[in-house]
Length: 311
Image 1 (cartoon, rainbow, N blue to C red):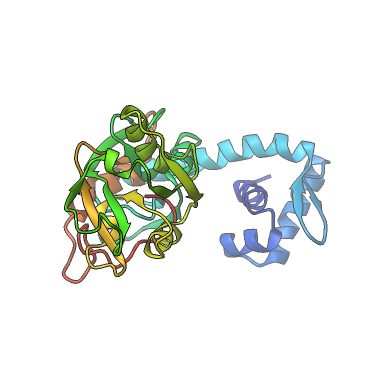
Image 2 (image 1 turned 90 degrees about the vertical axis):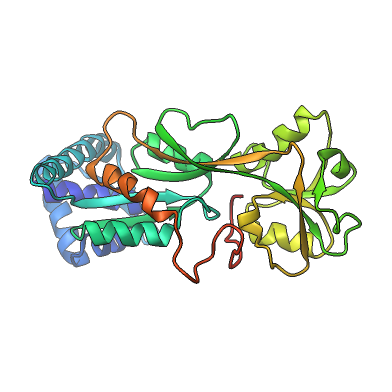
């Protein structure tokens, strides 16, 4: 048994596919299958049950996988530590971001990181804050860029505040309040809302503010896509709350208004609190240089349009 065979087992279990595992490991499927078959013969146990539609681990495979992951992670850490001692950063940075992050230009951050650490690789995952924090805790992500309501900090991870931004009311351009520059939450008490699903961190920002004001609101439309939420508002079906950088000042068919004493979204960077990898610390060091956006790139008040998922 060797380390490469363990890598193959970990990758097959992760992807549930010999084909995708071979692609990710940059080998042919036949070579990967041959190595796993040889390992199974050595162990005297089948590690995977294969069918025409899926691949799953056996009980023996699950038991082996636990230790294989540990061995592979330890080998990667040893390699990275040796490189770090020599002043190099190697390995793969696993970065997770909410799609509406405005505190940092993600493309610029990755570009700066790769420019300074050409031997390192970056894998990008997009998701909501809850899922990203959980992935950091499980060791599946090295750094996550999050958006949470004011007063909440990521649990079980190290974190740093990047920026805070008061949410604005987003209204159809034909709405009776569309000409108002500022509103209070009571002005929206009788409105129909579009918002993220209940229980998500994106939804919590608005829910907490209305609950603190003693206002019950009608959330008729729930979606995990910003594009859909704003589309519902533009169609005159609802109103919503959003960070101004997500909406964009020039978006057609929408009007925004500041909310006096309204909810605030705080963006954070989160990483492993116990044993952060060198790639994570190297990326965190370049974040301050990633807040300034080059000419032509969308900034908080000149968004080129929101991406889908979380506010």
